[in-house]
Length: 326
Image 1 (cartoon, rainbow, N blue to C red):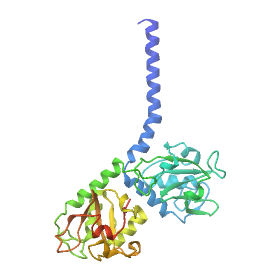
Image 2: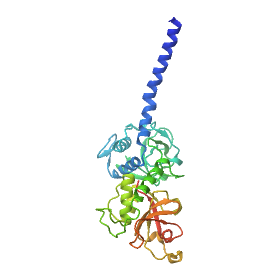
Image 3: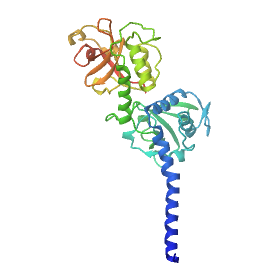
Image 4: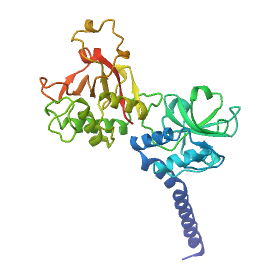
């Protein structure tokens, strides 16, 4: 081998080693942070943890579990969800992917400064519905604030979770593959019980009979591994409001959403004239399947668990809200 050949091979080897080292330290670590935690359930865990810590004490630099600094709160919450991130504002401000505020989703890290420019001085976690959680030095506690009230102080949004539009995110241009897939799994789990006889106040100890909320309970437990408890329709609606996202616009429902209804007043639209449905009590729940169909069970005479039409029927006239518990 000539000296020239040896130099060429050595140069190639050094370049290859450098490239592999850069990938191992940069690309692979980023992929682990984002791609290995791609489920909507992880986003829900982050949001649930953030809400659960509201009221805890503020302490500069603290990382929990009883007191938190600004960055320490995010570090603790993500660690509980199985994700390791940095522990300083400066480090987290470079983590993951930079996101436009118009594309913000639940679980995103949000950064602020007192004058809205320069390096961030405090941060929090967006939890949907124009809200974020952060450890406030001024209020000496972990608090929930409105993003819109801090819009002039916002300097950046970073994402270390995959986009899924799952928990009250804005905007919601449509379902991602993850979200759609989870909705399909919920529907598939529920369809296994087609024909199961209806029983009001079923015990939930077996699946020989079901009422409406037992059907939805099993569908979400088996299809999405989400346990909403053994309560009825109203209890499930409260669970959705607390842990997930919901809408009162019937045209914004997504496949797999739970849909909640007021009591039956009649079949015709005129039977509901003058009734403010939003102020009625929730008495029934079903699963939206898309294509104007519901997975439903509501009386012994109806034949048990079945698929029914939705809009332009008494179900559409009785609709109060719909959403998903994550």
